Length: 116
Image (tube, rainbow, N blue to C red):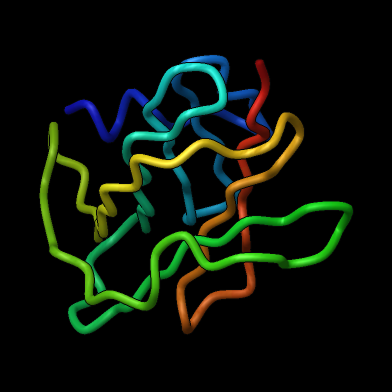
């Protein structure tokens, strides 16, 4: 259920935790201020074999991989089907960095802005 709670519309700041989605693709960040503890990439629907990654955007450019390509797990929460991949991060990022998710077969790349 926590994964569903992290889905918010548009680009959201991650003061401690936050999320963003674009269409069926979402990213959720759990952390404190600039330190990110965990990142989750979600895809609405079941797509067995889906792969996801998360990365940092700074100044409009991709600068770092946070979580390399990983196979998702299928889950169902409250009658909704999702694919999810989770990365334990434990790193601090710069104020204004954007953590984004990507699925190999999708064009959407939602991002969460890290803020103090």
